[in-house]
Image (cartoon, rainbow, N blue to C red; front, side, top):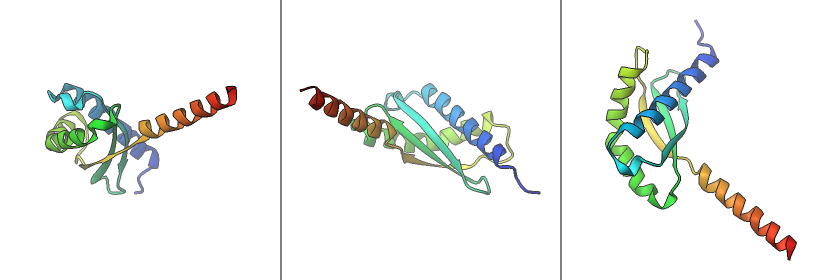
Amino acid sequence: MVQRPFKKDIFQEEIKAQLNLNLRQLNDTRLTFVSITKVELTADYKIATVFWDTYDSSKRGDVMKAIDSVKGKLRAILASELKARQVPSLTFHYDGQFEAEQKITDILNDEHRQGKN
């Protein structure tokens, strides 16, 4: 039987939602402004690549250390929250979407200011 892709999408979104919810419940201030932006599961559902971002890019290193220290706890929480036979292993990667958006905004603002002068 072939898995339907939409089920995978739903499971990825559920993992993302649970991680975002549970990150806020952990008592680590370094994780306060962290957001899970995307989750990608492998075809066999064994590994979830989790993309994260923070509103303060200067604290990216501290955030990565904090994520590494709670990775096992997050997986255990997922195991208790998700209704799945197997919870995927989690690998975390920085997603600089907020940083890229800010750069684009800055460029557009500069262009707008130059056009007005």
